[in-house]
Length: 265
Image 1 (cartoon, rainbow, N blue to C red):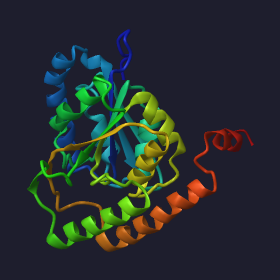
Image 2 (cartoon, rainbow, N blue to C red):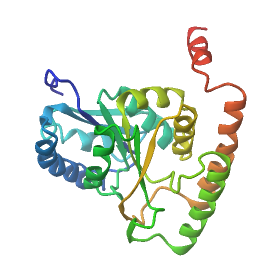
Image 3 (spheres, helix red, strand yellow):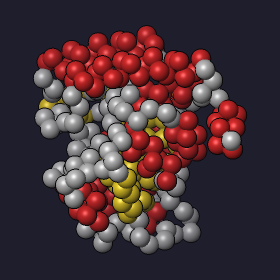
């Protein structure tokens, strides 16, 4: 990994990956192709972009495959931990290691195409928002390849529960494509406690708690039938975790003073 230019890192792209040896090459190739042109629009160098692949205890050689892309990205990190801890744990690790002024995490299957970042980054650059999240739940969203009907229905029901308990007014907390201002990411992900798929809700709950401005952005989205999400199993875990979020808040676990005390003790 080469050192970045004098201006530091402009954008960090975090890719959590669990047994993604098959899909990851295409994903990293698409990110590389996009960045080749995007850096010209942003007026930054490619060495001001970092890509962080976080291998969540894979058993299929995901890390080794990711390392074959070192020659394409001036700043590529491949982090690996074992055993498998969950998507939330991996995203947190990547976002806290990241150094970018802006920090994006994206699913390894790029169900939200990487060029949708073009809609989101200007909102943070202009100061209009502190966080921009991709959404499948807005009228302007384009679901180019849809999920099976039962998954869509369960997803909508889950969102209604999420809105009632945690993030009213946000129509899609679970789309895996979210952009944060760097300082905001550092604050929120340090407080994150959930390792599973409900981590998105926890982070957005904290963002609301601290009065950050969240822009929900309609995007193009393509369902990947090889998703790692198991509807019933993970759905029940996520419902439980919604209650954990509220309980954490009542117990003061999101108080930053308490967090510092816990670290020092």
